[in-house]
Structures are given as structure tokens and as C-alpha cells.
Image (cartoon, rainbow over all chains, first blue to last red; front, side, top):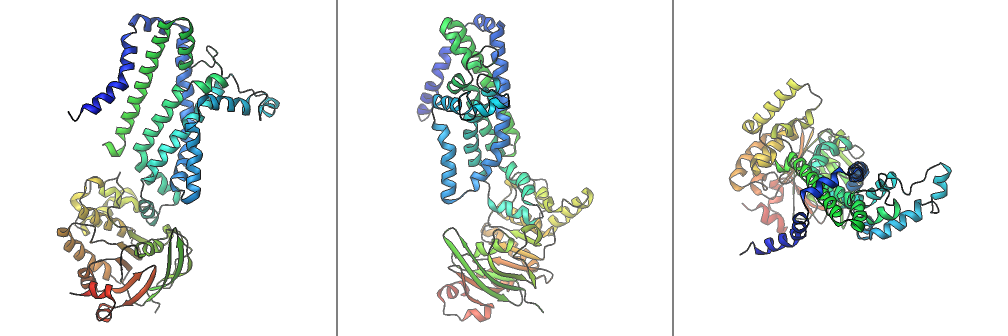
Amino acid sequence: MRHLPFVLCLGVLFLPLAGLVAGTSPGEIAEALGRPSTRAAIGLSLSTSLVALLIVILVGTPAAWALSRARGATGRAARLAFELPVVLPPAVLGIALLETFGRHGLFGPLLALGGVSLPFTATAVVLTQVLVGAPLYVLTAATAFRAVDDDLLLVARTLGAGPSRAWATIALPCAAPGLVAAAGLGWARALGEFGATLLFAGNLEGRTQTLPLAIYQAFEHDMGEARAIAVVLVVLAVAVLGALTAAGAGTWREA
Amino acid sequence: MKPDLDLDVRVRLAGFALDVQLRVERGPVALVGPNGAGKTTLLRLLAGAAAHEGRMEVRGRALGALPPEARGVGYLPQGSALFPHLTAAENVAYGLAHLPRGAREARVRSLLRDVGAESLASRSARGLSGGEQQRVALARALATEPGILLLDEPTSSVDIASRPGIRALLAPVLRDASRFAVVVTHDVRDLLAWEPHIALVEGGRITASGSFAELRGSAHPFLRELLSV
């Protein structure tokens, strides 16, 4: 009986997924996978979201560390600054990106001088994914870093390690399981990004059409195709979640 | 001869001010006092955890401007402070990265033997009991042959059965004249075993300082309670 709430929760979470999978025939999936537009969307979704994840990890990890050590009013303000984009609706972000980097946006003319136009390019897709994935990654990674005891770092320092060696050999591995989880969240958010991408990068087949946008387009004319692509996206998400869980198990805490 | 410890430090941390004047001719020094009085803060300052105003000298050597890695300090923090992702041997080897592999392994073995923890070498730090962790952490702190040893409640964070062993292990370590030791404790048995100079920390200040014999007759309620045997 005490498992009932757990089972109910799982049921609510998985019922729509079960409906999706049950309603999709293997033939539909094979047909969708045979379409060049679907394959292009898979390639674009994977490549852009993984590039975005790499950028998020490189820039976000030091930021998360700094955030985890920020105290008092500064710390609260910094945390709020990272929480704001998480609660911002994607459509707002899309408009904001256009107003900033669009042809008539704040930096549009400057970018145009250098011969760069961001909207409706794969770069715009990556930029959008970085912006939605980074705050989630930084907040989650900062929580993992906050659990690292300052005394561990002080001991490492007294044993001859400079600040960067102490950080790389103690703080980073101690927080590793949490960092892997943060990367998973950030990546999932980037892979699923839809609204802001649609507004800022458009829905150009083979160029900016990621899997969520491909579902949206197929939905307009062929529900079967939309279902099939949705199942492909689920499989991709599960595969990456599995890979990250395995990576997490490889770190010390799960060993 | 220079005094072992000459402190005149002031520091203001979030919601807490430390203002310590303390001169001790011969160590070891035991910091005693109520919880939250600033004992750990003072110990961490000696290790180089934060910047402070004033003077901090150990055996005539000014520490104040030095980063932790240049102080020649061995620090054993309160509770379980081993690097949790490493084995016992890897913890001890952390400060010996400059040694060639063979020499390093031999030194780690000898350090673990000295603290009675040889058999724990390949065990993960997380899997060790409180007493085992303290032994390994002591070996790690002694690995770099520090001139200053800082120990935060080394006996109280282990189970009661392990305390006499840790106390006896520390006695010669603390009395060793080649290094100066500061230890935080709440236990009169530690004071009897180690015969340190005792400094009472209250509200971020030193309010009494002297040998066991000198402080024993004190009318101060905390000392009277602590030193009654």
C-alpha cells in the first residue's frame, strides 16, 4: 500500500508516453527514419545539442563553482540571475534573441559589418540551446559544488596544492556525480528546446529544423509522421540518459 | 629563543569577529572553550584559510602573508575530512606528489604503519570508521613533515572505544619538539595525556591561558567544569 503514491506518480508520468508508443507502428517509424528530412533533423539535433552542452560545461562549470562560493547579498543576487532564465517562457527568449542578435536588433548592424548574420542558422540553434541549458546546468552544478566541504580544499592546500590543483583534484571529483546529473538536465533542456528556436532560428529543413521542430511541422500535415519522430526523440533522450547514468555510475559515489 | 606561538590577529567573518592575542613559549597548545567560540576559526586561520589583520608568528616565522601551501602546516579538520573519492593510501600520498613513485609508495606504507593503519591502505576513504579515518588523516597530515600541526577535535569525533587509542597515538606526535602543535579539544583526558599549554577561547577572544596546574584553581565556570577530574 505504501508504494501506491509512487506507482500513481509513475503512472501519470508514463501514461502519455505509453499512449504515444502504443499508437505508433514500427512501419511508421521505419518510414520516418527513411525520410532525409528526419535524418537531417536527428543529425542537427544531436550535433547542435552536444556542441551546446560542451559550451555550457566549459563556461558553466567555473561559473557554478563561483556561484557555490558566493555568500550574502551577492550570492543571492547571482543565484537569482541564473534562476530568471529558467522561469522565462521560451517565446520571450526567442523574441529577446531576435531583438539582440537579429538583423534589426541591438547588435545586428555590428554583426552585419563583420558579415555575420545569426538568425536562421545552425549557430542560432546552438546559441538558443546554450541559453536555455546553461542556467539549469549552472544551478544544479552549483548545488553539487556547495556540498564540497571547504576543509577538504584547505587540507589539499596545506599538502602543497595550489588553488587550481586543489580544485581540479578535490572539488571537481567530489562534485562529479552532481555535475553529470547537471549535464544531463542541461542537455535534455537543449535537445527539447522548441519555442525560442522556432522564433530565432526558424524551421528550415536541413538547416535549423531540429527534432522538436520536425514534429511540429509533421503535425500540420501527417500525424503518423509526427508520432514516429516523437518516438525517435524519446529513444534518443533515453539513450543519452542511459549514457549519462552509466557515466555517473563510473564516478566514485556510485561505485 | 623565540616563543612557539605569538598571535595578535583580528578578523571579521560573516557574523563573527575574532580578536586574539596569545603568546605561548612552549607548545603544544590546546584550545578549549564553548562551541561557536572561534576555536576552529582560529585553527583555520593558522592554516591560511582567510586573510586577517595583525601578526601571526610560529617559532619566529611570520605566517600571515603566506598561502596555505607555503606554511608548512599539517591540518586535521574536525570529523571525517579524508578525500572521499580516494583510497586511504591515495589520501596519504596526496602531499607527496613530488616524490618518485617507488619512494612515495614506501613512504605511504611507513606513514600508515606509524598510525596503525597499514591494513587500510587500499580501502576507500568512505568505507572507513571514524577512528580509522582519524588515523589515516593523521598520516596524511604528517606526510609532508610539517613544522606546524593543527588538529581539530581529533578524539571527540571518533566513537568512545577508539578514543584512548587515538589519544595515545597523538601523545608523542604532539610532544615532538621538531614541530609545534595546536589542538582543539573538549576532553580533560586529552589535556592530562598531552600536557599542553591551555588557552580558553570565548566569544572570539582568549580569556584565560596557562598550564593545567595554573588553570586548575581557576574560578572560571567553564574551566572549573572542564578541568575537574
